[in-house]
Image (cartoon, rainbow, N blue to C red; front, side):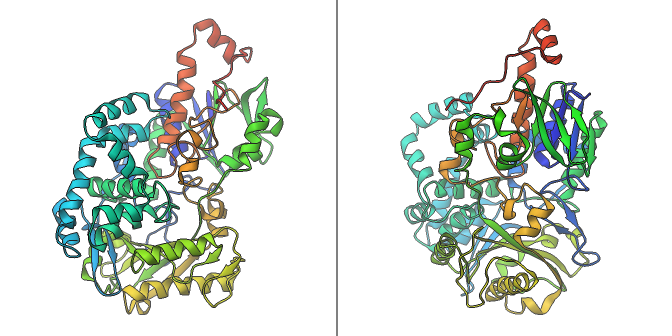
Length: 542
């Protein structure tokens, strides 16, 4: 019988398993899919010789994460690669805002839109540099991050804290208007805010756009050499080297709760896997509380709150094998790993408004990945492995275009939407479609079938909006990995601090499980391990 069972071998599940194994626990990880990785996997399914990331690709949060740094994954084969530029946001007229790991290069790009905007970027970067360590500590530790928050509060008290707090809760449109005269800086902030499901007019989108921009400025948007699954391979190798067990093709259907405590899981084929100390769930919040745990074992208030849980947007993705580099109208975009495709801030607002009206956008804002530019091993010399994704509503009521898309995502609708995405790329890169050797379409149902945590392709484990963050995540009054069931911990992106491949939810869950046993005397520990302990984990206040 293992000390802990981890449900799900995504990055968070594997991080949790590694930390428990480091503490001397025996750990068994059960994964539904035939291979580990969750949303960090790659394949060569588009064309021979072309490596394509199935889901996530660029990892600024991984580069900044003290959790992953502490695992020393480079000792298990992980290597990182960077594109010449971090990010570009071209416009149809040939203008282009560029985010680079050199502050001067970024600033020069913005000065081309309006003289003086480079210095405005430097001022935002100076704020980041003064508070970066405390912000990252607060981001990657369980909520509430008491020590990091106290340090940050002391520094802010002496440095205009209320003004910074105001800046961070601003809508990104307003933040851009206050800080920049031209469109370049505004586009970098707003495009990065739309990495989540935050519109330019949403409260807090300014803070998120600033955070993502500064992460890119400092750490870049690196990619694992060889494909996103290289990160998973390193995590799995490390776990196995420490005696952990990883079994794929083992879907968990139920968490067994006895005397208000999680004691085992049951797989789809009827196998019961007992857990001596803890069950950690790298699964979505609705799956954990709406399927794996019997409703009779949960507080009525939690079930009521769960009905208000909000997913982030659905995702539609296209992968390409290209016979040459993308022919961007703006040369500056050629060296960027990530390219944002929307012709100005108003087009971003229009895109988000169409989603809010439950329409398939007619000009989809696309995040475009140039993977060979970022990592030359991804395709043959002179070619490009590329992808783009955009967001669509989960519940589609109409098509803002004139092609009658309904959200059935059958074979015809997938091809129609993929063509729409390609037309958006063509606006900024005329001749793009002539380079396509092969393409693969991953519609929302496909993404969910490949990873059950990605409901409709929702990639952040729930909305990033302020009403489902901090102590509101995943439901009001929580914000921590402990659950109402003793010995059961939420270890997925549904928990604070949310999505992004940084390992913090998994690490927080592992530390919570370890704290429970470190704080026990020998007699109480023995009672807990034999099932006679009636003292559960802290139940979230409500």
